[in-house]
Amino acid sequence: MSDDRTRVLITRPAEDAAPLARRLAALGYEASVEPMLDIAWLDGPEPGLDGVRALLFTSANGVRAFIRRTARRERPVYAVGDATARAAADAGFRHVESAGGDVYALADLVARRCPAGEGPLLHVAGTVVAGDLAGLLGEKGFVVRREAMYEALPSAGLTARTAHDLDEGHIRAVLIFSPRTARSFVSLVGEAGLIERCRTVDLLCLSPAVAEAARTCGEEPVPWRCVQVAERPEQDSLLALLPDRSGGAA
Image 1: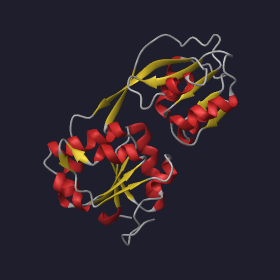
Image 2 (image 1 turned 180 degrees about the horizontal axis):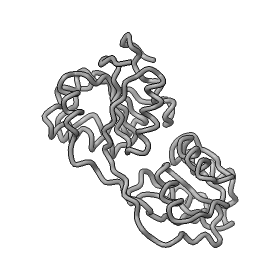
Image 3 (image 1 turned 90 degrees about the vertical axis):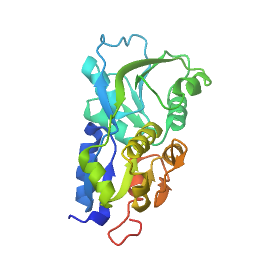
């Protein structure tokens, strides 16, 4: 299908954007990819797992970073959501559970599954984290060791294709998964002088925090055609907001 009214812009890093673009194509949407963050893997030693009770992953990139450093897969894994859990299972971890939500849901899942005091938990993360997972679990009596194994670097500018598509009104919806990505996207749109072009674009957000971050560029409101937030902070819930070819909700 090639219908400009239903073109969807994906702002995820390239490794996550590619399978999402294939899924959107299978659903009948034309997808464009404009990563707002590039993932840089940080070099370091094999993580020490002596005494570690379980691994905590708050993104698929955490899984990818971990398996770059070690072949060990024996520790239980608790993942923030289903996509991260799938990445862990695909990497060969045998005991994987998904919290199906955000860091609050992940903290609750860990508290139900792991008695506090039976060893520290290792949170594999980026240099910048969203939410205070260690603090939430610390209140429940857990010790969390966070190791930054990757860095998400912001994009320096919009590609010529995305700038053209926005300017010509070809993009129907933008999918945004994190507040950091939202801030980066609206900043680059503003730098390109295309804020007014958002009037014809639906903003589809994974969480209320994402929507809040994307509503303004500096002090200037961004005039999105509409702003919608996923019922649950999961990709499937976000995709349920997609417009259909007639202009309504999917």
